[in-house]
Length: 68
Image (tube, rainbow, N blue to C red; front, side, top):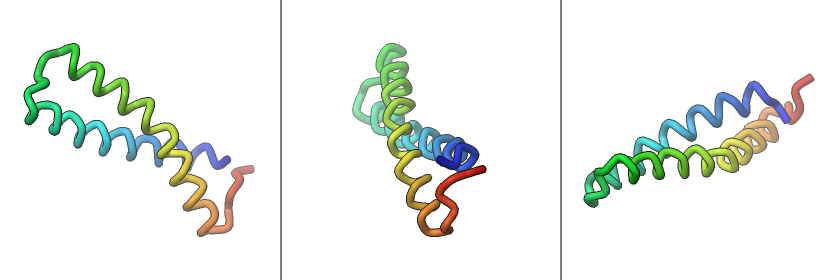
């Protein structure tokens, strides 16, 4: 796997996903600290498969699936 590309994709995915889900949590009334921490941890874990998916997708488009 292309680890530099994965780290960039993970950074983008975790930032976007956490931002969207925290806004949704705040609008729906889950505005206490334990709720926000739970959302942040869940988004950080959910972004790992998203980062892997997009890394493989971009790697297959560019033809550079591995980083050597």
